[in-house]
Image (cartoon, rainbow, N blue to C red; front, top):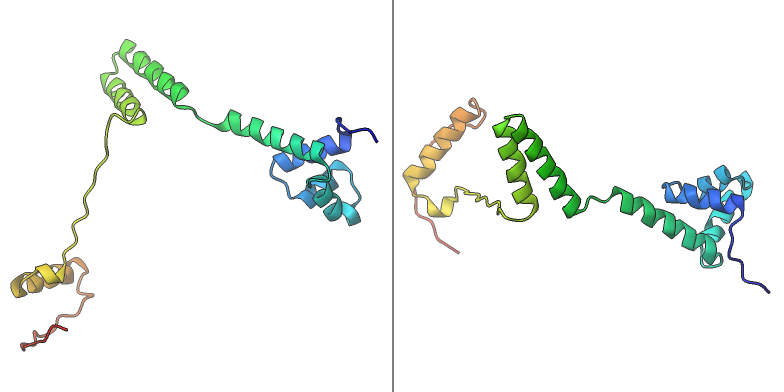
Length: 156
């Protein structure tokens, strides 16, 4: 038995359809396989039983991924070209923005942010009451105003 290395036109069309993201059943039907057998045909075509078809699907998917991927070198070059064009046109703000974007893409800048949360545990009674009043006014009175209940409590 000879090893098959070439795809039929239907198999090639199937592989292209799958690589485009179609479901195997739909890809088989679009490629010309029988509608009532398209689900089975799609499963078999994309399985290890058809390594040539499977290999072609992976090759097409890799080719599409390689085209779609943005690599760092190209990105930095594009930003440099934008910066240079902006400088030639005297658009200094745009040039600076492009250069800062290049630096960020290259990892020269670290974006840090800090979230501060008002924790009741770290606040005294007056601070809590003041914060509740702020929230009341910020929410246009949605938060109810209540009386403060004095008392002792036990920490468990």
